Amino acid sequence: MPRRSNISPQTRKVIARLFEDPGIWWHGYDLCRVLELKSGTLYPILMRLKKQGMLEAAWQDPSKPGRPPRQVYQLSAEGRTLAAAQKAEMTDPIIPTPEGSPT
Amino acid sequence: MTKAPPFIRKFANHLTLSLLDAAGEDQREWALAMAAEIDAIDSHWHALSFALGCWQVIWRMDGRPARWARFGLATLICSWAGAKAYLVWITVPMAGPSTNTDLPNWIPLWAGVAGVSYVLTGLCLLRRRFSGVATGLCFALMLNAVAYLCILRDTAIASPWLLALIGEDYVIWTMILGGLAGISAIAPRRGAQQ
Image 1 (cartoon, rainbow over the protein chains, first blue to last red):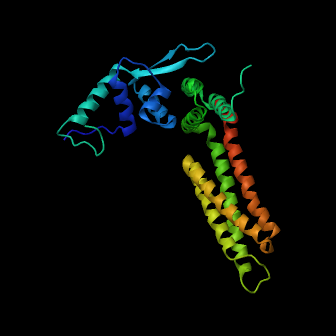
Image 2: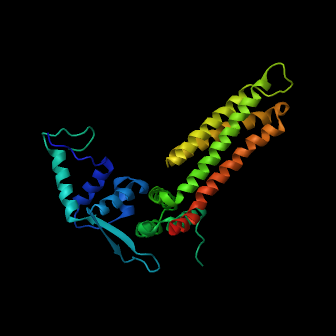
């Protein structure tokens, strides 16, 4: 039986959400709101993904004068590959899905 | 004239600034990113919640410069727990019917339980389990507050040294919180030296 990767559920949520709209750059706070994760949970995930090369980060010019530039995130090519594999893993009929996860 | 920000926003801004101070060189970019997000949040309470979470991230990552401070605080907590345990040891014989003291029997037991709670709080601090630290401190403080209120209700059993000992808990708690907040100012210098 293929081995399921040991990514945490929160990391899976982040990867899945970023994979839904691969061309969109996300702010950290928007990800927190959409995924209902605290900043203390989200940012370690983003840091880990960026360190592993799964995430791209860029600085965005401020929308209002006097505000600092904000960092935005999207999946890298490797991250999109991982996300596709993760999605396939979740829908594979051979591998049982964990209880409560979307099918 | 611009309106002054409310206290919640000021506190969130202060946390943001201390976040930038506390972050090491390799976390600087992430600290700037988190600080920019806090600035962009319109809701003051959300900004504070976000800032507290970001502080937790930096604290966990930059453990090396703050390690000595955590050990110091844990030692302080456990020393106080030892003092409370000593209180149990010296007051239990005094609570018998043959003594003149009006100290009720449950006071030393509560002091002992609070002492155990302090020890567990110290262990949580060493392991960087900050929710455990908050829970332990609140629990010990609650025990002491209840004991204090009961003693105030019945002033006949109020002992000056006992009241001072229970009152000291509030001082210790303030020192611990002040110490945790002060780490943001001292940690970068220790990190730079290392």
